[in-house]
Image (cartoon, rainbow, N blue to C red):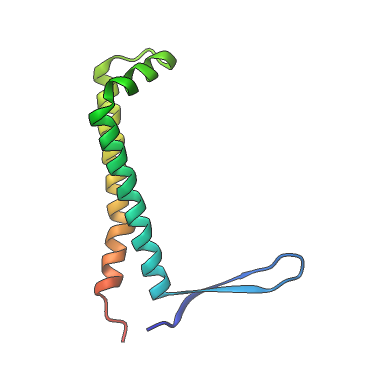
Length: 102
């Protein structure tokens, strides 16, 4: 089950180091990445819900933007982040978690 799926050789000034990525290591990496991405999503959502006015006023100093495009921009970007977090970290993690590599 822990057979290497990728070997990376990394050398610095003639040193040879190799890092082996196993399915278990990849599963752990994807799981941690999914948790970090979901944490970013939750923090963004909390900031948008509870500090929306402050965020809007801060953006108004830099850009002349009304509330409607501001809201649309945030909802779109949160949607993109959620979609990419689910597709590229959570789904591969779950596949590796449920797969039987025997």
